[in-house]
Amino acid sequence: MVACREGINQSYNIVMGAPKHKWSREEESALRSAVAKHGPGRWRTILKDPDFSQVLFLRSNVDLKDKWRNICSSALQVSSPRTPNWLDSLITEAICTMKQPGGSSKTAIGNYIQERYEVPPNFKQLLSSKLKYLSAFGTGKLIKVKRKYRIPNSTALSSHKKRHLGTLSDKKRVQNDEVSVQRQSEVDADLAKVTIVNIHEAAAVAAQAVAEAEAAMVEADEAAKQAEIAEAEAEAAQVFAEEVSKSLKGIKQLQCADDPLLEVTERRGRS
Image 1 (tube, rainbow, N blue to C red):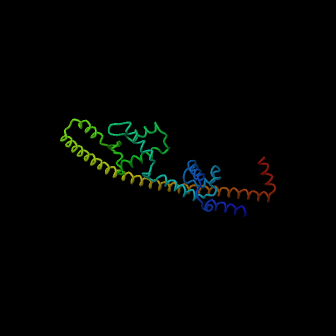
Image 2 (image 1 turned 120 degrees about the vertical axis):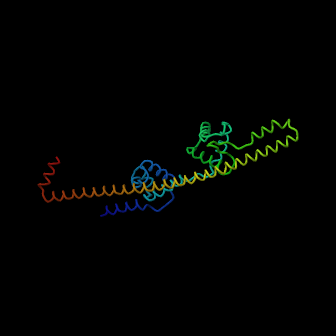
């Protein structure tokens, strides 16, 4: 009876857990490693694994499930425009240095930066978010045309003015300035159109990303539930088998106690 009560108490602690407290970095790291080893949803197996039980002994399977959900939710959140400022200057440097006709692709920009600088592990994700922000949210820092990025400027207009400024009369200068202003207004109008289009594209991409993230979370929850059900059934079958084995042993012992000849026969059969 005492052993039975201890087993019940241990099972209760595994399910209900200890009083809640903030997750430590060591616990979170252990949870990530455990999920990488056993997969999501195998919370009871993780708690019984000696590689992780020493760190997660204060946590229940419900705690592990909730924490893993929070980790997944944080990872699926769309990055905000507040990505590191160092990336702005590197993107500008890449586009200006390569001087590719029509602008530079995301792949070309990424390769340029990776070949010359140390980048974090999530560099590709940061680069994608930063390019979308610089070209789609009205900052005016980049123009995206046919999946290529370029820096908006009036270099062509300025060089045109410099070539003719020294030889034109005052009248021609005024005419040239009027033409430049007209062209600049056309460039600004084109830039505004491109910005509006990019904003709509960014909104569509963001909506699709949110929908895909929600679908992934639903699938992950369903898979976790199925894994928990399968694990519970396996544990129940194991407990049942152990109880049957104990019962058979008890029956044999009783039979041997009632019939000494049967006990002798059993011993000879074993030898």
